[in-house]
Length: 311
Image 1 (cartoon, helix red, strand yellow):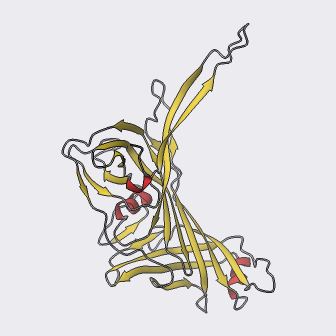
Image 2: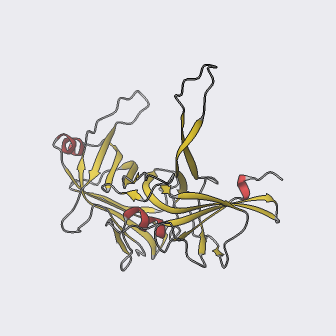
Image 3: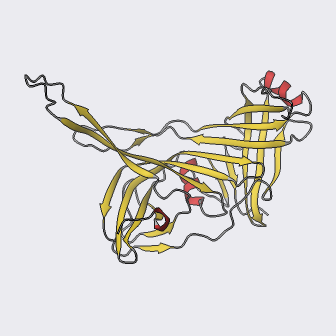
């Protein structure tokens, strides 16, 4: 029987070392809005050999790389291990800062080919979080996308020996309308009215080709690049003047539906980039679009800081 995306299970487990799945893995069901995220990208090349009969002599494989995106709706506690992987850090007394500790996972996509009887597994080992994109916009749910790169994909028809699967959390999906508070841009005399905020954390992962292997030997790591943009209702020249002055400050906001089940996302030092007042018509609000970059803050010793269990 053909498989349905609606019955696909996505699960993940932290690895012992890059590409090494625990002997008896405790998988955690992964909350996502896409039933198929990671995939294998096969690189091939065509032979240039000249033949008198004008035929192509061969097409051969050069490499196999695994990558893909999982979009999610933000909920408390559901993605804490992935946030560690994204920031290359570790939760310490409920605080996570960007650092340089590699975290890897095995992701598994399970598809039912015969309801209740047949299952097919795509198991991706050596998965690392290359990129995280977050969107907080008025009257919308808070969304994020985790962009992953993995070592290899293994197709099997049975679960791993001793594997267990924990159910996904039932924490509510957070919205920008009801579950965001204390949005602050330090350095602005008047708190801005923000219609939308988005930011990206990019680790710049790269493959490392190896003679004698179609897979990457591991992943190279770039800098922690943190960039974003705010759409702010225009009320005065204050913020736009800061854009022109190449100013900045600190940016933070808290998201959560219940006390002690909230996150505070903080960028201790941001610099405003090439912002502008977009063109508009008779039915448009005057807005200021402010791109920004988060840079290293000596006091916090990071560029981005996430605090959980916030009251």
